[in-house]
Length: 180
Picture 1 (cartoon, rainbow, N blue to C red):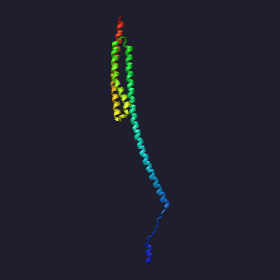
Picture 2: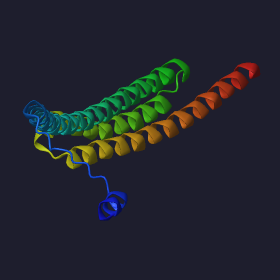
Picture 3: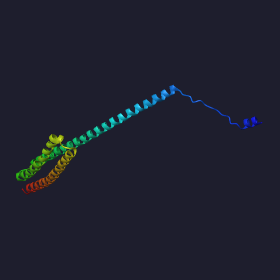
Picture 4: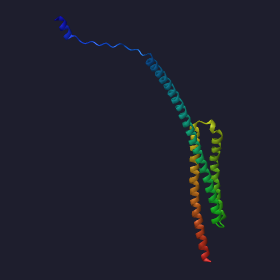
């Protein structure tokens, strides 16, 4: 009976032997080694991308500065063209009023002479600009732009006064010819 009681209450035991597969371990070690190598390559690639990004940022900054200087130079050319057009307009439309033409030409020449300082600043930028920091170059370009705007505003005012004077002179000439 004891045997039956033991048989009834006994738990069936199952055992599993630990299986060691050398080829599976070798494959796992190989995969871990490859993953470590890929991780190192990715780290190196990340570092190279950071360097490339830094270089692109520096080039972008330089291109922005070159673009700004190009714009300032174009503004200088436009200012000189407007001054030239003003003188031609005066010569063509002021008639025999040489004193008036001379006075406006003198004022235009004064604006051009003051603007020559901007041209000198541009020369400095182009020659010594490599020795300047980015901030110094930017500040110089902004100063040139500000001075050019000031000269341009003066020239616009002069153009407006010149046109008003030409209109008055034409009206005066028209009235004088009607009296005759």
